[in-house]
Length: 388
Figure 1 (cartoon, rainbow, N blue to C red):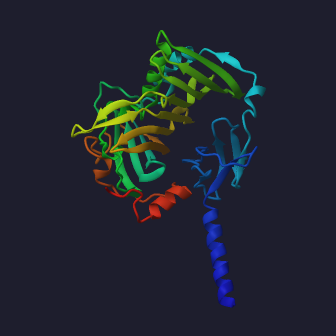
Figure 2: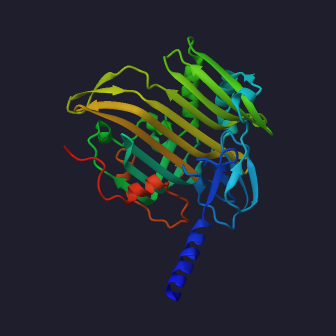
Figure 3: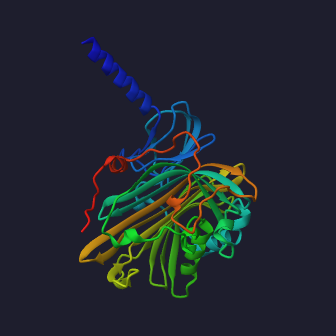
């Protein structure tokens, strides 16, 4: 009996220890977890996962939590869960104020280098990439990396290395299961678009292309304001045939977009024919894409906190089988410091698969929390897809 009591006590102590190492953020209205909530600690940034959890130690003091659509919360002393109040409850209760979307985009784009930090920068980054076929994960990687950028601005006249450099420090999780999907044979080499998607100015330029098209129709509405920060929703019916919607946070004092989320709605497009490397033909349909960029003020300058890209409903019919693809890539910029122009040594060679590059081992505090689904995938021994 005493042995059992000792084991129970040990279990409780261990459980409480690990529970204290994470914080959960919930919606105060319905109690549901809030994913992608940013927690700005003293010297570090972390985000909640899809279940609302983030790795925050119970000794943490004086930190700020923010999430799109919710009021910011200043936390003096650790407690969990933290419940955020919505910026608004029902859209029909909101007094909409029309804003000039084109004017905001053009002003931020033309003054980008003045309002966002434009010097060499070094970041400790959590890189997370996930791919699913027919709602089953077949690829997952989570790695601690360093990122160096010369100007925090994508310039297509520069080489990849003069825009961005990456160093792999520690691959925390890596699993790649075989799939019959046509998608899994795609290369992980960088293209201009792949590189450009790391930078907000690249996406801002792409969005402006749709706004400026002579056949486009667009609107923007301010639906919530807290201090100098405005929450603005927007819709663009592009003359290029794409429906776009999104939201942004705009700091009216600094004239900076601090949060940007854009949805490209393309899953109603008709099928097209594509060919793989050996000339074999298959049917392909575009899906929907989401891009997110989050910034914060550090030492008086705006620097990236997070970027995320998601895609779903990308469909291929290959060998008589339907494959619906989902992908996501997320970068969390845990730390920032000013750097010089020398860059990283060694660094990732972008002319080959990222994960074929050499690791540079560096032990750091773990800032990663897997979701239940991701942990189940990591722990699984059998593949999701059998070979034919």
